[in-house]
Image 1 (cartoon, helix red, strand yellow):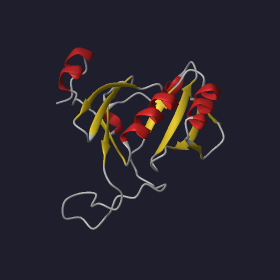
Image 2 (image 1 turned 90 degrees about the vertical axis):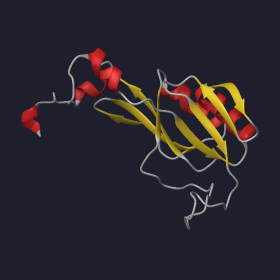
Image 3 (image 1 turned 30 degrees about the vertical axis):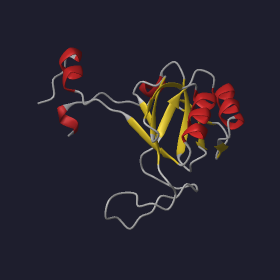
Image 4 (image 1 turned 135 degrees about the vertical axis):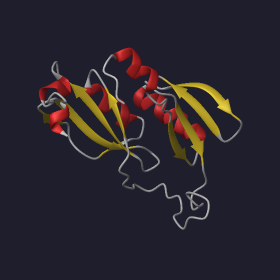
Length: 154
């Protein structure tokens, strides 16, 4: 049962962490620090690091190219640009400055800054082929296009 008050909703929300496969931890730490301001928190052996600065912890996991993406799978890791239905959006206050920082850090801008009813967005790729977006919400944000949820909408 979905509860409507915020306290009970937060109590049942799953905790989320973000895991990003990279082929070089140091390159990954440097990129995410320079591109979006994440900070190294700790090293987890020689195969992972934890970064902070987002609303969820971000873990970079060192995985060699051409290794199986999962046990028994035929798909191999490939750090060329690839599409995935799950990606990260970084909400920023100044999209022009954020885009300059990300590109200076090595990100590839894949779109110009585009305007939408809720704000502005740019699409990029990191050094490891992962797509991500920079989003600058305007004052109304997603409220500009949102409709209230109602059980009658189901």
